[in-house]
Length: 139
Image (cartoon, rainbow, N blue to C red; front, side):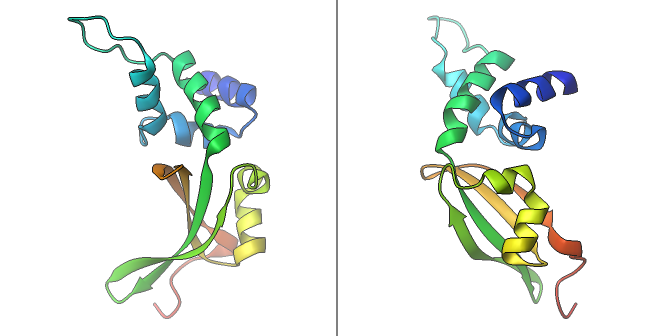
């Protein structure tokens, strides 16, 4: 499985962590698009997409995604997210190549959430503890 993931990520020209984020089981957006792109045979359930179907849908979706970057801040007993910025499609090569270094350089030492969207549709998210972040200030 890992070698398949690494091979497909390399073929897609993206880091394995990002490919897994988009195509893994945790966030079903790309998988669901691949599943519903398949033709339906009357009287049968829709087939699950193959790895190749998912890879093809990833290559279609990923280039048009934009990114929202948020800072996690603890306020009392709750956690809120302050928007730090957005990156349009094609503007985040450095972010995906070296995420912690890019985020530290651009936003500093924080706990950061990176969300990917396809138009208005949420695709997936991942979190980073940037620059040696260990806890919320004052806690």
